[in-house]
Length: 333
Ligand code: VGL
Ligand code: ZN
Image 1 (tube, helix red, strand yellow):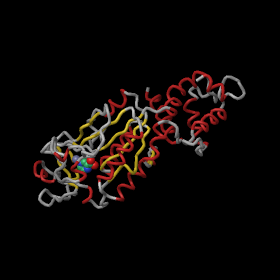
Image 2 (cartoon, rainbow, N blue to C red):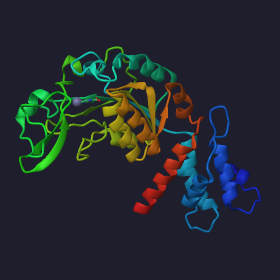
Image 3 (tube, rainbow, N blue to C red):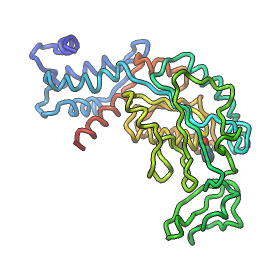
Image 4 (cartoon, rainbow, N blue to C red):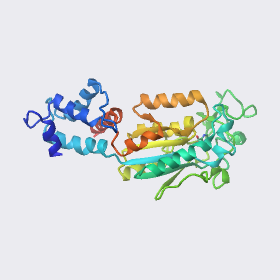
């Protein structure tokens, strides 16, 4: 840390000026081959302002210590998790096989890609999420008669078709809840809910079960669709000090999309591995990529995972997002 400070304190005044700090950032933000990423100055200004806690336009040794401990260290050596979303039989060749959906994807194609990602990288944690529904789950088309619909539901129980969206009247008290209706799928302990047998299971991996409450669906591996109750995922990540979450799996525009969005919302540097996903509908898949990028995540090819996970490829956007996150947490304290 001291050596780094010294190296960039060119005028040796014991402070990093804005231009000295910018030089440090430009040295930091390089790809695997050492080529500097283009960085806009407004981004550098914002990062400088975040770490210049006392707003004297200089970063002193104490401010630098914080910057080093909470930011530079993580940018250079991230703590990584791979989240493999719902690579289960039902989505590949079972009752909700995505091959029958509009995009016509073959879910099985993620298997060799995810296996290769697991072979080529050493993640600090590997997580497999499983859609894990009870028999009476609210998302099953054949259960639509089990619960009252809201007066505003455009589709009635008798008319409802697979992939329609209905509005349930939660607790019959007038609280509306939208629900897309799916074929019965991923029933707990059934063949359809098992992970595909070709999928490599990493050592010390953990499994996260979602959609277990009969009355609420849960696309994300973090939160249910109403963001009321959470799985163990965030706790498992934070107890290992995970900084970077890589997401892949099925379905791209449903459970992968929701998991990626929540990973960003929870403050993780979030990387969506495009070719490690297969989905339902092309326009929704494109929207998932666009939203990920707009929210400060990264959409990459699996060949880029290694550079990112080892901290040798350091795109500015992930570091920038992390600095913003630090600022947010500071302000909330
Ligand atoms: C999923 C639809 C219903 C998914 C889960 O894993 O993407 N899709 N339940
Ligand atoms: Zn489901």
